[in-house]
Image: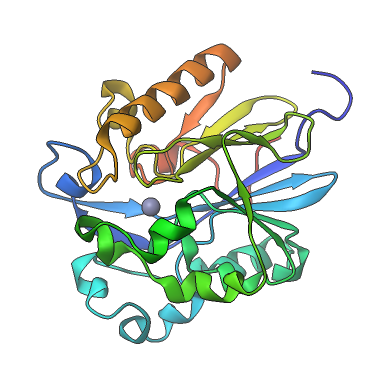
Length: 261
Ligand SMILES: [Zn+2]
């Protein structure tokens, strides 16, 4: 790498927790699992990029008013410190500082904070928004169109396939269909290392290691090939795969206010 072909800093922002049937997260899973719902902030000389937006901030005060029965079904627990705007404030940023929002997919644990960033540019894979409004029944409980309605009036950049955000290779949206039709992961090249932030292409390191999809996936075959795509890329680029929802991997990484360079 040379010049400015890398992003400057990467923060993992802590978010709420969900406690879910493990069978929803990985084929063959048993019992229940409490998983983190992080978002990621990337500083680049041309902007401040947020990957996913967590739960609706106001859900801290009245979760049932926002999520109804999903509060119990998904075991939603959230503190005021875990609001995405609180996480940004804790490291010295306001929502207005975020210039680009990249959405991995349209599930509720990723779309909740979208309306905080009306001034930003929004990026999503082609086909994902349509599925968010009209998902297959098996996964329908995990969508909240009220989260992305406000952005519908502002406008999305729908991209078709892998997309290099700043044209320098440092932040690349990776098309990973399967979990949802427009599911995406994110490659981030920093000065000292690179990461592949899986989003929900996989929900655990075990899913990565064993090519195991999740039961609510829209397309199982594509989900498996997207997992393989991430493994191939990680091997080629010597990147660290970071599975956001993996509860065992989460404590092994730095979280904001600490960051990676
Ligand atoms: Zn998720």
